[in-house]
Amino acid sequence: MTAVRIPWDELAESPKKAEQLFDLLMHAEYGDRVRTINGAGGDGGCDAWFEDIRRAVEFKSWTKLGNSQRAQASRSLKRASENDIASWVLVAPVHPTPKDWEWFDDLKARYRDSIDLQFLEVRWLEAKLAKYPGIARFILSTPHQEVVDLLRELHQEQAAMTGGVPDLLKRLTVLSTRADELSPIWGVDFASRGGRNEVSVRLQEGIPPQHIEVHLDVPDDPAGSAVTGDVAAALHYGSGTVIEPGCITRVENEAISALNLPWQQVAMVLPDQRVTAGFPRAATLRARTHEGARGRPLHLTLHYATEGSRGMYVHGADSTGMLRVRLRVDRPGQLEAGTNVGVLLQYGPTDTQHAAAVDPEALLRTVNALDSLDHTPGMALTLGTEQIDLDAGLREPTGNFAPISRALQDFIVVRDELDIALPLPAHWSAHDERNIALLAGLLRGDEVAMPLNSTVCHQISTVEEARLYMDLLESGHGGRIEFEIVGLSLPIGQVQVPTEPLYVAFTRAQIANATEVAEAITAKDSAIPVDIRPAPGSTVIGRRTPFPSPGGTSPVM
Image 1 (tube, rainbow, N blue to C red):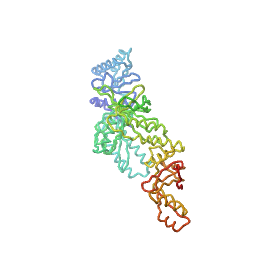
Image 2: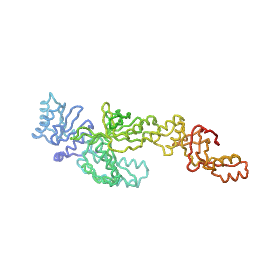
Image 3: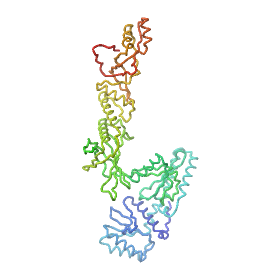
Image 4: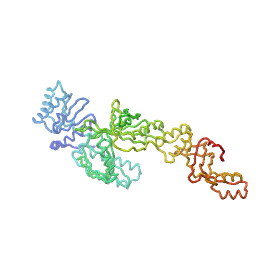
């Protein structure tokens, strides 16, 4: 790549541009080692600082060292020496004369016992800028039309692409590399989807934070409110979000505005500002009543935080991974005595935590703790030895967790008694919830109401047996019939769970084919089909053992 010629004399007339060039060069060359300093109001003789070696760097846009410039440099060094520094470096695009070097040697001698001094002149600057030609190109030119031209080129090449996807990917890579050369601050990524070409803008690696103002046009509906909330959370709490194409109307930032991007096609990524130092960290959460009584602890692990202008979100989970916790910690304001803390609890499986792998006993403890939190006015969060009391405010309990708790208790009974692998409640349908309750009731030895009201029992009877059924079931209000069902299974998810042994009773039964049975009795047929079903309003009861006979014997089939 051909180096860009730097008109240093012209740049000296624009100190703001010269300082921006120095700022970009420092971060490109040294990355996170260096911290550049805004000199508004005085920089203390230091435009850049290296903490690891306690080095201060002062940049001047001068192209010569006259008496005035030497006096300014001496004053800057004096101010810098008042701090705890080990070395001081003067950087300026000067072609130093022998007199200039003599002056600087005298300066070094004056501070020989306390500070090491170094002078980096124009040759050092130009050698470094040759490594990063995009910096000089950005400072000295306005490449605003090139991104639009690259998009047009992408569209034309897609129409003529003969090598399929590999050719397209290769061209996208080339175009992205060319776009990155337009600005040392902002990178541009290209994509083609849904019949249109799009660009995404990102901050280049090693670039210091930039001040930008993004103007959005979002609809006045729930979707628009969600976009606004996500962007606010990204800025205020560092949570990160993606502003999708079609939302941005304009962006106010000199470097990015120079690209003249077609904003309706641009997506902007606000990455999460993640903090991992000090994590993971243990915590507990307990329900807290008005009287201050505390419930059983819900043990949590806090994994990381994201930080923004107003505070941070701290993210964690319980031992099952089914409960995610997000603490909101606000920075105290000028008039506030303490810190505001809020908590968001999200229950349910995630893509990374498959519910079938969760320990059901641990999940039951989590759900019971959540049910307790749901019904109490507050909670207590403990971090180490520090306890933070949280008030939930005035609200009605949701009541969502008590049914889940009952279902989990039933699940554990079925799993332990039958020794089968079942999906956990997060994947259950309403029928699954009903069936797990039925199975658990049967396994506990209870009599349970079974969903078998459409069941018809088909019996081949003699004339005497058929007459007995007619007398019992079709005279008066009908009678009770008890029998054993063989081969019935109840589904839980995709698992068929056998119910044997299963004894069933129709609390009131009737004969579905009574007319045909009466005719067969009159004809004295040797084999008479009798179909018995539950009478309207009756209940079908099931149990695992035979029903006790109350003083007599009912026909059992």
